[in-house]
Length: 89
Image 1: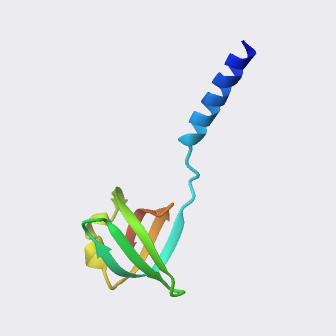
Image 2: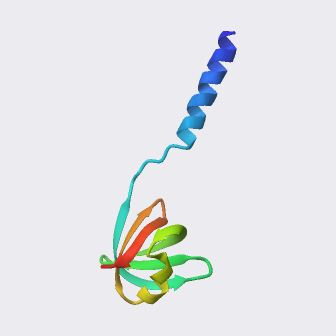
Image 3: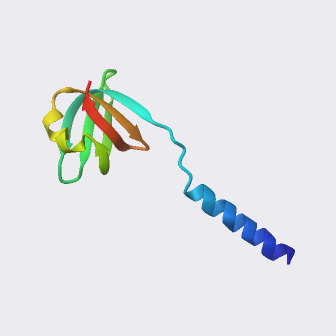
C-alpha cells in the first residue's frame, strides 16, 4: 500500500511540473535581419552584434507584420526561443 501511494504521489508531482512554465521573458532589441514566412523564423541581430534565431507562433502579437519589419529596428519579447511579441523599437 505504501508503494502504491508513493508511486501515485511521484506521478502526480512529475505531471504537475511538466506543465508548469517558468514565466521567463527575454527582451531582444536590435535589427530584424531576415524573416522566413514559411517556417516563421526571424533572425535578429542584437545591438551587441549577436544573431538570435527566434520562432514566431500563431499567438505572437505583431507576427502578421513581421515581414514588413525586415531591416528595421525591432524589440522582441520571447520565451525559450518562441516569440510572444514583436514590434518596432
